[in-house]
Amino acid sequence: MQSIKSAALEPTRAELAGLSGWRAAVRILPAYGLPILAVLLAIFFSLLLPDSFPTALNVRSILSDKGIIALLSLGAMLPMMAGRIDLTIGFGIVMWHILAITLQVWYHVPWPLACGVVLLCSASAGLVNGLLVEIAQIDSFIATLGTGTILYALALWLTGGRQVTGDLAQGFINVNALSPFSIPMPAIYVIVLGVVLWIVTERLPLGRRIYAIGANERAAALNGISVRANVIGVFIGSGLIAGFTGCVLASKLQIGQANVGLDYLLPALVGTFLGTTTIRPGRVNVLGTIVGVLILAIGISGIQQLGGAFFVEPLFNGTTLVVAIALAGVAQRRRSAAVSEPTKPVPTSE
Image (cartoon, rainbow, N blue to C red; front, side, top):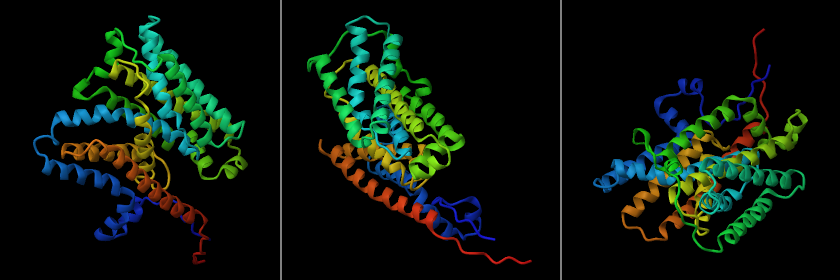
């Protein structure tokens, strides 16, 4: 009889039950160090800035501003589950928020229909990405960089490089402006989308199939998983989330301009890569992604309130991205080693 070694880097309840308090804490730290760090950062900035940081106004500001990034990070997570990357989330949001505004202002399209058109177009862009990656066999980085740049060019062409302004329906403005129970709507969207994606990725066979493709595409195909259909599907899902986020951003800004959107690409990717280092180390996951965005939000907000210069945010994001990719690589290698490590026979009594 042989023992089966788990590939999970996160500790199980049974494993923790057999450890002393100190050894259990050491075992937990690699998997839950990032949430712990987020709490410590919040306490640190609250002590340094007691009049501004630990306030309801600052919390609502963080939830509202970073809700857009969290939505994009969750969208970027889907292709990463399958071992791909989608750069159109940053380029596309430029086009999608401009399209949502122009349809209403220039063509007087009712806002629900305008949002529907945006979702249809963004899903179509995701389909194109999926076809380029799976049918044309173009590397996902190159394919999505190309389509993203085309979308950005179309946004510039549509606006002529100028802002698009005009009267918008109050219903459309409320897509972002409402705050039920004092919770900004972007945060509510993140919660709802996070719950749906958590159920799909952690509880349904579809999520397991996508994770299997990301772990070993050939093995997944040999086990009867349709790699092509699932990969195209995750790109369509990523496109839909980007389109919805574009509508939320348009509701928030109430103007269309091509110089916004790209600033969201790097933080969204940072949040997703950070998510691979926590909760489920070595693979992208919903809770880890949300924690990754949260720690970015707390860090940047605290640094800015301490008087950080205008370049602090991109510097912080870039540095965190490098660190996150390095940590994700280490976690992935540890998970791969756990899978490939030969098991030793365990003696059994007759």
